[in-house]
Length: 460
Ligand code: PMP
Image (cartoon, rainbow, N blue to C red; front, side):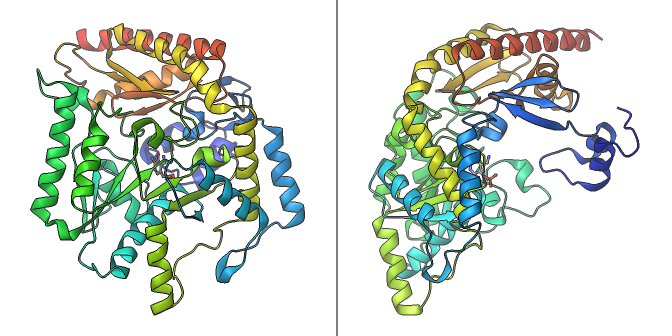
């Protein structure tokens, strides 16, 4: 791409380091500049319209033009544009938001801690695991188990929990004390002839072996996204969480559910924990909490964890953790309005009514010659592309097959995201059945183009 001097593209290349972007390629190709949004669509600066097939980054649940959220932010900006919550200060939107979240929790929760991103919520959870075990007199019980292909964020602690090589390589991560157990993806990790339930049993046995091998008195917590999203939409097999939670209970290990993507209706239930029967001690949430309109995250903690904080505060002093913008009144007001909209429009009911269409269009693509598996739940799904459907042999990574499919999708009017060999879909929750059809029509064309492209490449 030739960039005009002083164009926004050229200025971007000259000034911005982009997250999750190939810096070398970006220097040559430049950015795609998004100018505005309307409903489930965004528009680039040339006026081209795209369905946001990933809800921005799994967060724009109500699309890109929800006036009520604009008004909620403006109202709050005029009243109290900022205040902090340190030293016992409170603001009304923060209190009301916490009350609403506690009322939605799938299991009894005691308090809500606010932060600004999913990573910060997970960092907070990790620090609370340590703090809790110090408070209850088990200072050795500090190791944390996460899973391969998990995604929990990019700060030093949360990137350590993340189980993807690209987040560790060259960053000198993970930090000591964070361990990764098996990914529950049956398609890739199930053995030939193994049933899904037997695979679930094997995952739980493997977790138990790890705990026993490390020493149960040294393992403090297990982190899990109910359905792993960024690792390639890994839907856990039936009975998986039942078996995993039995192991955790046996060794008195805390469970932290990372609801950053599953939370607020994505799977057709309020939380992913509702879908899979998780009974967490802490739950992190972000993204759809504010429909993406403000940066805000929350960590819910149960009474047992809260009591430990009270005990430590009484004995050693103030709880030494918090962000300048924890409980930011504007972010809280927008999140509160988001939750009101979810309730008034019965967003979970809406997802339930359109998700059969989404899932049937998704699974129909399982027959496409490039697709090894089409999998998903609710309004999230993945197409895993393979060279050979029978053997599941992947394409040579250097081909960037899914990235190519993503580029073709963009040409056909859909923004999606390639992660490894997967093409991922996670549209705004407010999407209609007709829009779901448009989305999949575009994706089908993109796959056909990619098939043609790869055919040429193989024979060349
Ligand atoms: N947890 C999960 C499950 C996520 O998907 C993400 C972000 N995609 C995070 C945590 C990190 O959130 P953030 O990017 O807001 O730090």
